[in-house]
View 1 (cartoon, protein in one colour):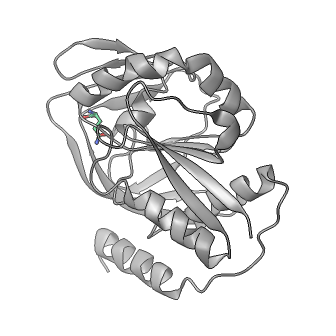
View 2 (cartoon, rainbow, N blue to C red; view 1 turned 180 degrees about the vertical axis):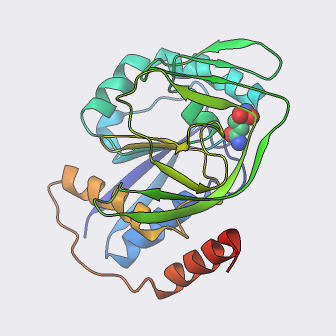
Length: 244
Ligand code: GLN
């Protein structure tokens, strides 16, 4: 049995449309695998000990909340980028994902500098991209479908053609409703617009993070969980979105 710790950034500010459910999913799956998991809430201006965590999570937020947190994120940008480069598992949802780019121009035209980790920018608009979404992804090494819910005014545009999306949109909007891409995938980091929460209905994505956490601890998790319920929920949502 091992102890895993997942840091939850700004839980009282960045947590929309059930995003916190991603942490519940990861904690329960780690317990089902026979391990312990602690979720460590990191408030605004809180101290984060990267040596002490196995994964970092931040949920979505409105433009206002994004403005409140990005200065605090800036304070630790260099260390966070180093950790991402070293393979720290990171899941950033929607508003959090947008902050990983070079800039976020809110719907009111106010420009926030992003962390600049990736060469993309996000431009907000009053008409929001809202609805259920299905994408195809190779994040686990094989082609899988990922289902979720999106609600964002921001449109994210990759400037670096080498950037890898999390997946390709089958139904829904994705990064900008134009280029067919959704999210970003880089080493053990996923940025995505998929709320829902994302992980309970996409168990293989949850296990992508669990395997990455275990590997960084020099551990092997090779138990096969019974995901009959999770996979049924995934199929039902996918059927509902794609129309039978
Ligand atoms: N405020 C951002 C937007 O509207 C992100 C919203 C969210 O996190 N759901 O695009």
